[in-house]
Image (cartoon, rainbow, N blue to C red):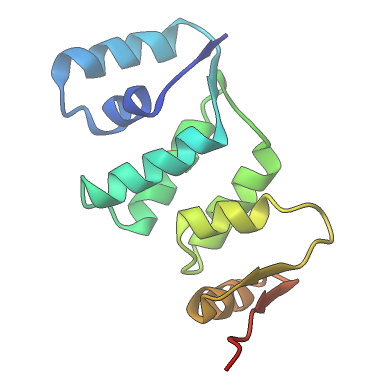
Length: 133
């Protein structure tokens, strides 16, 4: 099994550098691939910030990537839950944070907009931290 860095995943998904994209495709075709959650998180950030992908394009790309039979990821159930949350307006990073919490743990944030989006998406155990005045 080969664990890959963010730049390998980005080359595979964007093909913006033909030589590196070809090398990434060959690597992914050669055998089992391991992708850490942190790599997926960073990939989402890179695709949004540097390539202008919107959340639906990021979700689609990562869902297809993780659907490959030879691709394995850390904590696959929480990554699937995170990608599902992005379909309801929760940004990928927030969705990964939320879906990675311990079972039964309350998730709190000062970001009230995120809390509202998470609740609308069906997430439970999410609360805003009231600012002390």
